[in-house]
Length: 260
Ligand SMILES: NC(=O)c1ccc[n+]([C@@H]2O[C@H](COP(=O)([O-])OP(=O)(O)OC[C@H]3O[C@@H](n4cnc5c(N)ncnc54)[C@H](OP(=O)(O)O)[C@@H]3O)[C@@H](O)[C@H]2O)c1
Image (cartoon, rainbow, N blue to C red; front, side, top):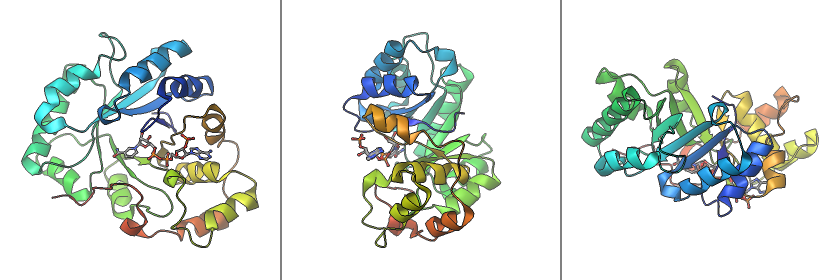
């Protein structure tokens, strides 16, 4: 899986953003039915003239429980009926254990039929993944959760590492809401190493082994946000960022990881 993906939540200029991202070296787009811009993702890919086989397109499906079949069929529309998704995620643990497992089994069936290549979950806490393990099912390849220096999701990250589940970091830029970083540590690290705040946040995620999914609809930002290779955040600056963790109190989105 590529190390960075373009997020497209609330991406009004989605098609242009996807085209720009592919032009600037991204090969991974994180989409979702909830975002209602799947067609635009397909338009952006076509406009870029990209080789589909070299791309990694993932999608979350929020209404998985009642409408899994529809979701899987709908999934193929934007990119053409012969197309596929590289990763298909259950968007959240909403719905209770029975429905969660039903939806997950549905995804495994879809994988068997070749509709999706890899199966993942999103916003799953360890207890939700344990349900899958206890049911004797294949574990998800990915768990996508809100993750950045202010909410490092340590119990989830540790659990996923132990079970060989890759963690994708959503909202890696904290939606540019830094009110929780009262001492301006992120800005100060950026100033010190002469990188942008966005680059520091993306790089922090990579150095921890996560797959960050920064969103932007501006070409220059899309390009700059991925210029995170060939340099590293030094250990002492990483330690300052690591010390910002507030657990759940640092979350800036819905973060439904504790759902029953
Ligand atoms: N599974 C889930 O439940 C879930 C939940 C939330 C998000 N996600 C995924 O994760 C992706 C990213 O998360 P997110 O969209 O919540 O937030 P994010 O990537 O942390 O932040 C996006 C915000 O930062 C701004 N931004 C980006 N680069 C910038 C730069 N270099 N300088 C200044 N501002 C910059 C963007 O504005 P502009 O666009 O105007 O540049 C936008 O307002 C989503 O798009 C989605 O794919 C998944």
